[in-house]
Image (tube, rainbow, N blue to C red):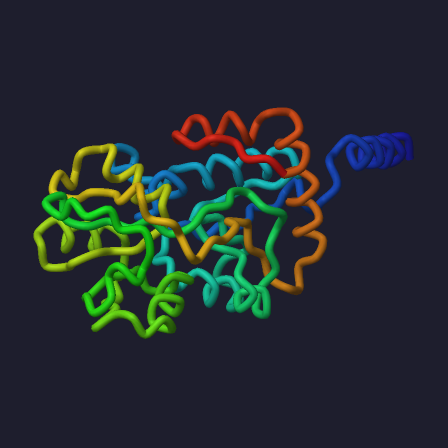
Length: 255
């Protein structure tokens, strides 16, 4: 009888001291892309996805009490992977557009920017608007907000759609494409690495499609969204977000 009571007491004590099941035990799958540097990219040295959005969701997870497992995938498959439960979170260079908000939910703002314009380095024209490229063949990345926006203008002879931004840069670099439109920070970071010496980022260009990068979750996960927003606000307030942005060459924004 004494032994039985001892076992019962030990069991109760263990139940009290062990953490409750739930967020602390959860490993959430996070969809990120291998070609969105500095937001997300494949680090060939470690064969893992790294970048600003990986650092951010990792810190959010630490604060909110869940672990993250980064799942590499193409940008165009992120939303479908989330809604089909293949992943639990999207943390990439994805704009929280009105069309996407009809399908998934987004966190509060992480970073705001518009499209950048790249042309061959031999093209010295100071392009200011899309009208300056009327009748030309241009390129943009599949699944981004830029593709439909460019096509709707009716300005271009063709809007070629590419799987990723490095492919756009390669075609501009070799002269096969007159101009390319893509996420300004990603273009700027790629060109700073010197991998596309024959490409020029047009600083005189004024973006048209300006959006806000945010973290995506399923519409059926309001508790997860609340946890992410709470932790994101905390990390903004204590300077963690600013530190992460600075690590990847971006300046913190007001808001």
